[in-house]
Image 1 (tube, rainbow, N blue to C red):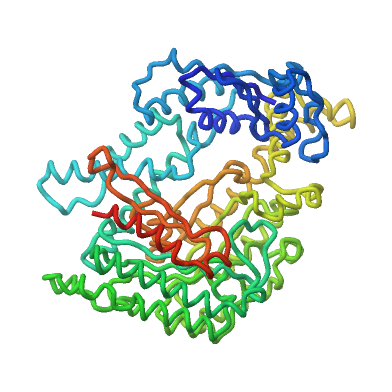
Image 2 (cartoon, rainbow, N blue to C red):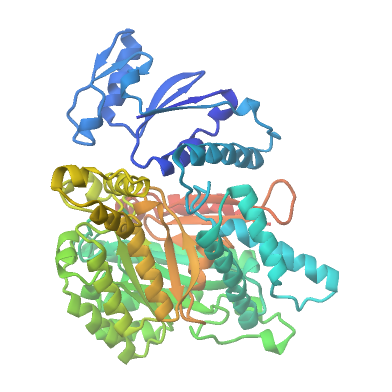
Length: 614
């Protein structure tokens, strides 16, 4: 356990400080001491209960070791002041009041994290690939710098034709990022390259419609049904069989919510709808009848919504009456076909006829043992069969998703998956590092799955990191002492071991994408992500998913319709700076039943945010 002592100023940055320390010491529990008292984070509930009891009684309290989570590391007794000193691995004191702070929270956070990062690097002798960044959208830090540099050169040159940065300008951006966030090397290059690529990609929206992405919005439609529930899934998703009788009600409410949303955005606020994304769940879990109903809803409520807006354009080049989707002004229509056990030829034909121009056929893995383990009720052959069927039907933009860190998989299994993907050459590849959420079966049934290896699991990362540190320091003499291994063989072991397993998986995926000439075009990170890595979308030129960029980087408003969906309204910042923005959110609850029975409640939530749009 790590003890974190925070002064009054540092207290409001507790989460940022803790998350940064945790990246150096994965899997550690925390005892937090502030002027308000002591509390635990990342510990078991039993330890938290014991602390509460000790505070209430003023006496030491025994920990009920009912939980199996890190039982060996659990404290046996808690004092009113917290954990006994012998259970503390490290202690950090952060005196932010002694630092050079300005009172501007964003700037102060950077100062605190940078000083802490430099201290941790000095203590551990290692640097983190992402520097002191712990947020989920690293590219969003670069994009405003790219846009500002382009606007500056437009002003200086008096020309609106400036679209690219010079090498010198790119170097200046990287220097600024390194200075503020301590990031360098491969990840710095990756986030900068993606920001530059995203800028070029999003310009296509203007080329197609005459409106910039900042003027438009995107629609997400949630279909929270699947054939079965996967082991790692934390989304609102139920088996389709349990809700078949209430599908008419769900679809009626979905139409009502979409109609209201489109009327507000396209009608009252004159914002063009630019991309549509249908996800879930698995939208193709719907049978052919209901999938056709869904496509009809989209066309009837969205199909001509942009016509009054775009018909006002004076330039014929921008009066786009038709796009690849068949819906004026809507430049992309994506459906997550997802699981091959939900795909039929008729469903693919329904999607194609409706103007869907991008789908996903997601293997997640090409190892049958893993598919069985995670609850996928299909075989690996069916993934290829349905992928080829989609090509036959006419889809020219197909994405495949894979997940690194699935239970039981090591590098050889991931390599096999990547080789299968390389054979079939999808137009894009999305690589996820498994992030385990509280609602996933893998968490809820933790005791059952505890004995199965999972690359990226905090205990595996800790063990692999210790092995690496020992090898690099030349301290791995236990091999000699216990097995009779020669010194030269130990040296070979040291040379052979370079990265934790999950990191090598990500490197293999990146190499595969490079071989397929797929470039990284969007990136995000998550809490509890395997190996503290990232999710990366790779794509062939021109096949990138615009929605993914717009949503993940919060480029414009994305409104979610359907049970469990959330909406993000991107609005001008309250500080009046036109280069800043603020994001207001609302959600559609956490269950299907409440959506079916009271959709008006969720429409009302949107109504409050629509009133903020100027």
